[in-house]
Amino acid sequence: MGIKVVKRHGNTLKEKLYLPAVFVGMKTTLSHFITNLSDKPHIKTMNYPEEQPHDISERYRGVHRLTKREDDTVRCVACFMCATACPAECIFIEAEERTDGVDEKMPKRFDIDLLECVFCGACVEACPCDAIRMDSGIFSFIGQKREDFVLTKEQLLAHKEKKQ
Amino acid sequence: MSTLSIFVVIINIVLALLFSLGLAPILVWVERRVAGLIQDRLGPNRCHINGIRLGGLVQSLADMLKLAFKEDFQPKAIQESFFFSLAPVIVFVSAFLSFMVMPFADDLIINGERFIMQGLPTDLGILWFLALAGLSVYGIMLGGWASRSKYSLLGAMRAGAQVISYEAAMGLSVVSLLITYGSIHLGDMVAYQGELLLGFIPAWGIVVQPIATIIFIVTAFAEANRTPFDLAEGESEIVGGFHTEYSAMRFGLFFVGEYVAMSASSALIVTLFFGGYHLPYLNTQTLQSTMPYILGFIILALPVGSFYAMRWIRKHNRWCEAGDVRNRESAFLQKGIIGFNVLVIVGLGALLYLGLTPTSTNVATAVIQISTFAVKLLLMNFVFVWVRWTLPRFRYDQLQTLGWKVLMPLAIANIVISAIIVVVKGL
Image 1 (cartoon, rainbow over the protein chains, first blue to last red):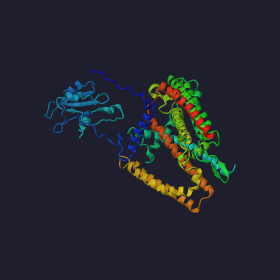
Image 2: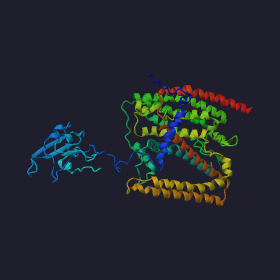
Image 3: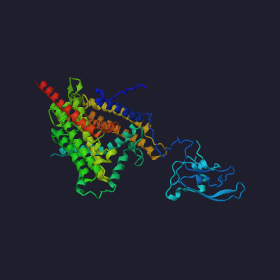
Image 4: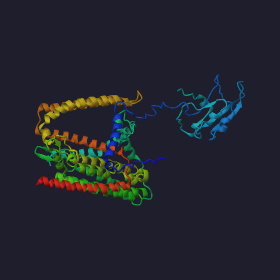
């Protein structure tokens, strides 16, 4: 292997004067300033609550939702796989017998505490029935008190899949 | 004292207040919006009073209210409570007073009476500025010491050492200017800059004394504690520097004082090096003799400029939601611009139609020169802001090396050279 000699910078008169480099830097910042005042600004930020982000990917893990069968009933069979897989232990399920003949079991209560959830997606991976998903696209969830952040089965069923 | 002289003095004081204190919220706004635009962000643009945002200027008002009504917290460890409160006052007052000797216009002559157009009618000029600009560091050091916090003390020590080393170079660069201009009165210096060099170059300080200009601008940045020399509040190492322990309006005074000091420095730079209140090629005599043409030019140029301003406002002053109250602002601003145009054109037209008397010529000259000074002042303040968002902070040893080993010898050499030139020309 040959030796690569790296050129040292900062020893010429022009570099020691500082001022040429200062002016080059000031030119760069001024060009940004003028561009952003012109008709075609390159501003990367948006007025957030009014303008919503449009580049949320399809695989983004947002707030959970419970999927439904074709007959609009809950798909979950209360197998406790998600609650077992959950590293944050934020899923609370209470099972009951399903009487309409579609399946044997269904959740009576299915709560997710979003304040404990780490949005790892382990519950989605664990589910054998594709009953829980995180594709609602909701990235900001607002509540006034702690209890608001515990999502019930009805709330989870109400979340819709985000259309791309 | 006649009523007229009292009136002119009051006008002068109001102007000085506007240029120093009134400019502070505008500068805070300029700083934040320019920072945003330079970094491809928007900056504060949300705050509004009944839809009027003025590009985010209302945010400064909100910030001021917040500072005034915030809890004025004082840590228990502070024993010298009086000095703790006194420090921001010193910083603010010295910055504010140093603005008082800047001439906004040439001496105004009304009915044979001569008025000096500056906040304080004194001839001390640059000595006054140097004395008071040096005084502001006492406030910083007192505040840093009285805070009883290591960060504050470190920040205050840095500020003290920095100001001492840069004050030397600044004073020496001013000496070479005094040799060239032959006066300490800022009005005389500006009058010198109204002349032409070799018949076609305006004899501005930047042309006559380029090295002194560079030294003075660099040291003015250091005096005003602005980036790249703002080690006194280097937030990456020492939290907030000297104002770590301050809150509410006591911090507010430091904050406003910084902007007033910046404004005063820019005013001095403009006065010393960029022709002060002179338009290029139009010193006071030429301006007065060609006054009808100048007023005619203003009547023609103002609508053209306003047209482009209104077009820009229509295109850019929008809020992203259609029904928002902020969308009404553009129409309001356009009406304001049209009203201002009509007012100015009618006023100037009447003045031209009735014929110019010596007094009205003098007053019109003063108004034009004050506007010129204001524009130059804002441009120089923009340069301060622009540099802040371009350059990173110096390391402390680099700062001292630059001050003592580069700027100081350069300033001394400049004095010798300018003295030789002046003596040789004088023979």
